[in-house]
Length: 162
Image 1 (cartoon, rainbow, N blue to C red):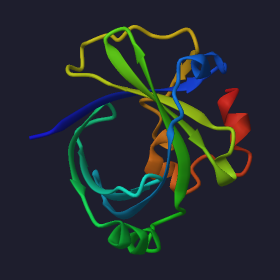
Image 2: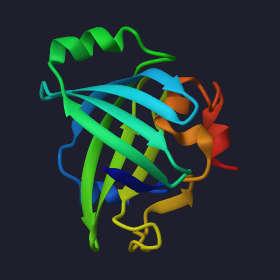
Image 3: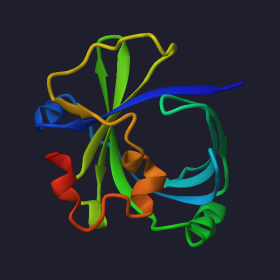
Image 4: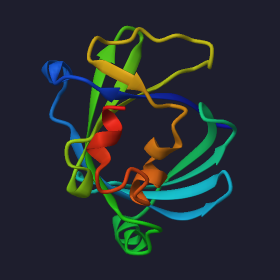
């Protein structure tokens, strides 16, 4: 069974950009959710599409299953979103023994930048880059589902300084 063990952080500077490649744009939406169960669809800028099912264990760990699907199906599913569709560009940076995924959000969340790192074990401590800010792993407002539902509100930039 696939498990995702992930930590999330806000970004405090643009220093990460010197290590990043060109990134890939994506559109995504949550199409089903109940309790700790969630189904997401994602359409990538290169034409790929994926359907993801996540079942939460706690804030740090989830069971995760991902499947390639036809892009046409993904586009139709995006129109069935619960909440808003999220658009973002994802960059990958190798730092220490881990790959960091940096998401730069667009639209209403333009300017929000979140870094995620996936780990093999929950007690593993990744080497934290200098450009990381506050950890938001345990803050439910920063899940992609909550962001799509407007969890940060219209004045979301104020939340970042708290």
